[in-house]
Image (cartoon, rainbow, N blue to C red; front, side, top):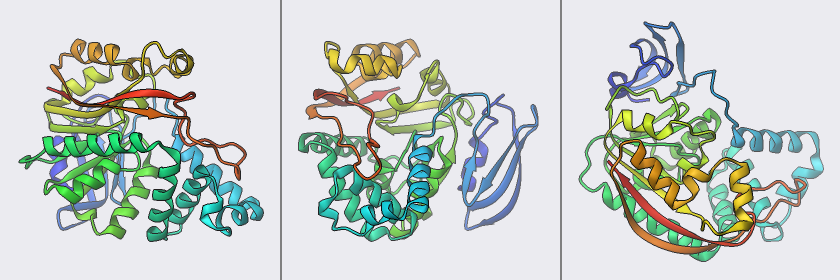
Length: 332
């Protein structure tokens, strides 16, 4: 975590001032530290360069933790699982099992091979037009950041696809955030292998309770992250509190008359951000002015499931083939 963040961070629980005890820092980056709130006495550590700013009262499901923990347990407990996943030609695996193989390779530090396997898996998990729209959205979003010299804060970074592209193509510092410390640590190891880690900070927090002072973020981005935040409640009001400039988000929307996927969307309580009409209304209600840019359409299919791990899936949606409307939302 970079030291420039200290003046922007507050207690995510009560927004009180944080008092920092820095144990290990070099070159403007903090590796180990402890922050304590002067108002409510909550404490937040920085460990292995990742600031852990989660609050205990909000429910959340760490799907990456569950997936990778299950994968690790299965491999350790059942040698035949490792044999079926890791000891066969990669072309004989389903795309889902290729992806799981890539995760294991990353965990073992075999990043070059992992990148090749995960790239191959992606081409089997998603339709060509889905991947083309995703690339187009990322390109457009990064174009929106031309000339930005402030740090860019990426919300719900996940495996860091957008962050990685920003590190490649921009000169600004980037702050990667996610509520999963595990996924952030995995991202950090990958960026260290790529030689990109010097310009990135990593913060683990829940987007519904951000650790930023009012107006502390000039530029915030997100790549398909907003719809993945469970029980969003007043999420956009919280983002409006901390963003003083622009929130630029890649989104994709389901057709409202798509009954095959509607039930699954409603059951997961993701309808606000997965339908264009309700998403725009929510941004406006939170006080944002919104522009919709770079629209494209793609066919999307349910992602194939694992055979080796008894039907484990990669993406929960869609559950039936559909057409997605992609766009870049610029909110300010």
